Image 1 (cartoon, helix red, strand yellow):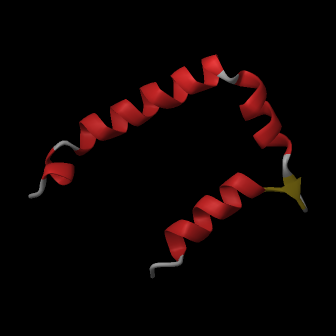
Image 2: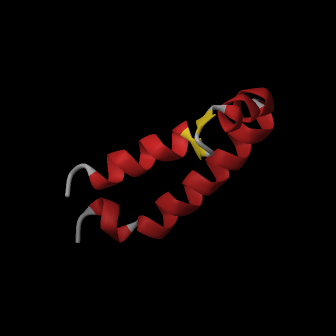
Image 3: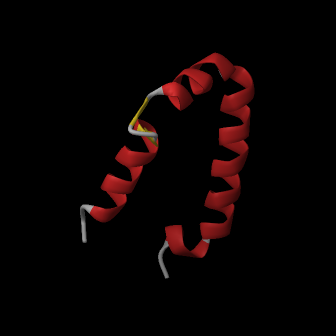
Amino acid sequence: MGLFERWLSVWVGAAIIGGIGLGRLLPDLFQFLATIEYANVNFVVAILIWVMIYPM
């Protein structure tokens, strides 16, 4: 196992804590990002799903 796989739970925890921290520091930015949608699909979610599926 590599470094990333070995410490995956730590990376996930750090991402959760970082997301909560950014949400508290920049709430207006995240509210704005939540409003950007087309046909009831949020653009941020659509882009992240595309990035996840594209390598397949």
